[in-house]
Length: 470
Image (cartoon, rainbow, N blue to C red; front, side, top):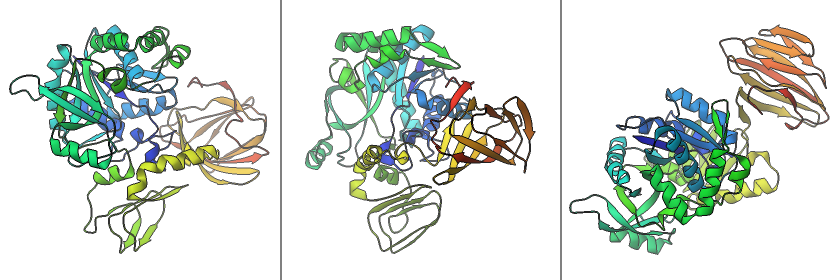
């Protein structure tokens, strides 16, 4: 049996302002109607002998992952929650322990959740090729056949083939991201592949290798998994044990040191969407070499990526630019500088700007809220509560709230009262009053919330009851 391990960590900062820490790129529909995470789930579903996946994600993204998984119609073997990020090697170790407990000793297919693969059949054939090698104790990685010199990827140098007529090769070494001249030599030699970050191996093989090569990491992961607790449908790894675990990638911790590494060449239209220029490569260019998405009007524009998410975007007489518009931020960058977008995000973080973390529309387990207007002593939000969902029983020390229902039905708890409100009806929640909002209906509840008070921050919430365990 093959168990996919879907890694959903990462903040995708180089795709800011679309990708942000609270809603990163793997949960966005960047290359089709499905999100990247959903595409990954569907990609593995058609592989013969493939079981339900283990999804590993940040605890802050647990409801995003669960809801998007539900939308695909597939179920997870487990949803593992990392209390902190420790890179891929510990994440896969905990997933391997989970698989050993629930499925014996399956082959693991480790996949980042944020990749695009256009040729699904070729990808699945490569997985089928790798399965018997993994069964025999090899640690398999998939090397992307390069079509250009690329400085944004690490490389894998192949050694001899595993046997006569074999399509897999022993790994000679892993190579760090090169400069452009060295990258050109790598591509011309035909002996190097891009490091995809995708792997196959038996659960026991990986755990044994990790135990020998990184014993401190191995012990911490075992401790974190043994002390894990169930929280609704999620498996929460023990925070103390996992935080004590050294952080490292599979490449550094295991693949670069093992003597059993094997690489299978893969030419399947792969793209890791590591920057806006990568995303541009996945779209069809117009006659001027542009990608224009959303409400865009362009005149005398060439070789540029223009994306509007919210309003009219116009451009005149530009070349080789990336322009991305969202409700609260606009990015303008030269195409050859998009790898440095992370520097902008870091400056926003240092300044305490929420735009580094949140979109104007913020997703919660129960639905969403979106800021409409804000001033010194008032704030206006649009709140959407999904059918059957309920917010926590809470109160605020510094603000009162007015709720106006514009769609659906609201069940409101206000102190000792319980109210049912429908469209065009409203209520007032005085400062310091316990309250709760619920959608008892079968359509989304939408309301306008007007907050007034001396402090309007999201941390002014005292929760008394919460079905989501916050």
